[in-house]
Image (cartoon, rainbow, N blue to C red; front, top):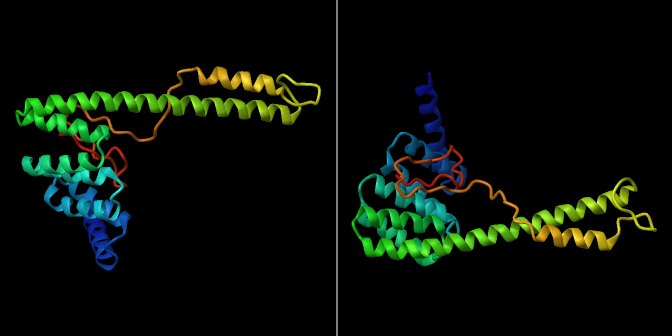
Amino acid sequence: ARVDDEAGALHFYQEAHRVYPVSMDVISWLGAFHVRNEVYEKAMPYFDLASKIQPQEVKWGLMVASCLRRVGAYPQALARYKAIDAEHPNNVECLKYLVHLCTELGRRDDAQAYMERLRKAEKAQAAEATVVANTMAARQQQSEFAANGQSGSGGMMNGAGAAGPAFIEDSYQMSAGLNVPVSQGKKVVAKVDGHNDDWGDEELGDDLLPMG
C-alpha cells in the first residue's frame, strides 16, 4: 500500500511540476523523494533548479554538490563547493565539506587551508551567536520588568507605580554580560568523517545537507 501511495504522490508532484515548474514546495518534495530512494542523479536537477530560483539559499548548491559526491563525481563536486565558497566565503557548512572532500582526495594542503578558514569562521559564528543570545535575553528580561510595572503587581516599584528605570537598566546590563546559549533553529552538524547523511524531511529543512 505504501508503494502505491508513494507512486501516486510522485505522479501528483510530477504533474504539479509540469504545470508550475517554479514551485519550491514541489521542487523540494521531488528532490527529497529521489534522495530517499537513493536516486541522486534524479534529485540533482531539482536541487540545481532550486539553487537558481533561490540563489541566496546556500543549502541548494550544497545539496547539488552532495549528490555529485554520492554518485562519485568528485571533481565536479569539488568545483561546486569551490563555486559556493567563492560566493559565500564564510559559510561554515561549505568549508566543512571542502575540508572533508579535499581530505578524501588526498589534497592535504588544500584541506589544511580550508581547515584554518573553517576555525576562524566557526569562532566568528560562535561570537555572533553569543551576541544575539545576550541581546535577546536582555530584551526579554527588560520586557518582563516593564510588564510587571504596568500590571502594578510584584517587582520593584517606584513612586509612580512603575518599575524603576534604573533597576531595568541595571538588569539589562547584567543580562548583557551573561553567556546565554541561543537556539538558531535547524542547524547543520556536518561531521568531518561524515558517513551518515541527514537528508531531513520532505520539506527540506536546513538539516538537508549530507556529508557522506
